[in-house]
Structures are given as structure tokens and as C-alpha cells.
Image (cartoon, rainbow, N blue to C red; front, side, top):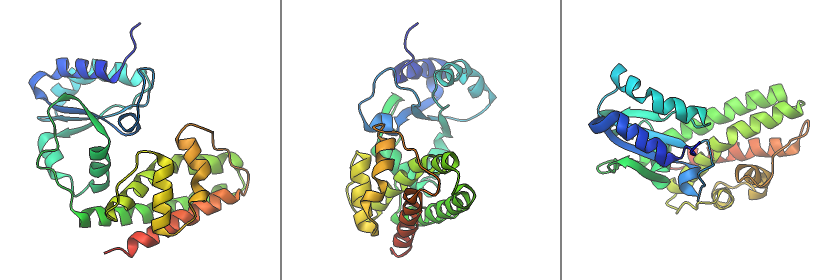
Length: 236
């Protein structure tokens, strides 16, 4: 059986939607790094003319095969929603803009701008929310090695997205490698970059993170999130 690649998915979606397709993007780690056809967990974003039952019916076979191959279904925006939502999803728009590949359709970024204040406001909101939820989970799982590991690992992707946004908000270039992002953002926010070393190794696929009961690395991670939130709160 032929490997289901992003290009195959794009071809199937384009065939299914025809002129209704505005753009199909691959974004995230797969667009940020070299990837192989065998990689799964590929993130895609679809912009189309409108969203209705006819669209979902046309997409269903392609999306079914895509998700069975281990990939999430695409995020779906109408053309108007995409143009109107940069204030609501400032973090996501800037992160996708930096790391994306156009698979089908036309470039959707023309005329799309993200205001710095929208980015700062969303980043502050997301960081404080993440911090509060992490503290809640940490209180419940502090002595449970497996649960504690799951809490930290589940939050990692979101936190690294926020660290990239910290760099953007501060006018810094955003490196592609997670380790460089952690190092530069830590220097700005004021926490030791070393506390993220094991998490970086996990995110980059070099070593699986396994925490022990009451692991000091988890406490240090919470402190790094708190310091980052405090730093963003002080930005104007």
C-alpha cells in the first residue's frame, strides 16, 4: 500500500473540493524540520470558501484515511474567518506563518497582519491559564511518577509555542530548534535554561522524559512557566 503523505492528502482534498479550496497548509514541527514520508502526527490547516454539510461530505473520505494514518484532522476556516481571526489567534497565526508549507491552493497570508498588542494579550492570558492548570495538576500528581510525567509532557508543546511567542514579542528572531528557543527565551524571561534540558530532549525525540515521584525537575518547570508569565505581564 502506498504511503499516505501530506502531498497525497493534499491531492485528495484538492480533488474533493475543487474550486472551494482556498489553501491547505502543513504547519508545525513537520514544516519546521525535514520530515520523511513515514512521519505521522502531521498538522494541517484548510481554508475554504464556506463550511457546510456538503463540504464535510466531500472531505470525509480523504480525512478518514488521513486520521487512520495517525494524523489529526485539519483545522478548518472559511475565507472570511481566516481573514477576521488574527486578533483572536495571534499566537497561532504567527507560529503557523513562521513554520508552514503550502500544500494546495494559494498563499493565504496576503493582507493578514497580527498586532503586537493582540499577541501580548493572548500570550499573557494563555500563560497564566497554563500556570494555574499546571499547579492544579501538580498538586494532584506530585507523588505519582506516571501522572507527573504525563502532566509535564502534555503541556510541553504549548509551552514551547509560548516561548517562541515570547521571542517574537521581544523582537527576537525565532530559532527552529527547541533547544535554542528554550535557551534564548530563558535568558529573556530570567529562568535557568538548564531546567528545560530534559524536556527539550523529549520534544526533539532524543530521550523520553520520565519523572520520579516529587521530581524536582517538575517543580523547576512550574517555576519556569511562572517566571515566563511574570515576564510577559511586565511587557508593554
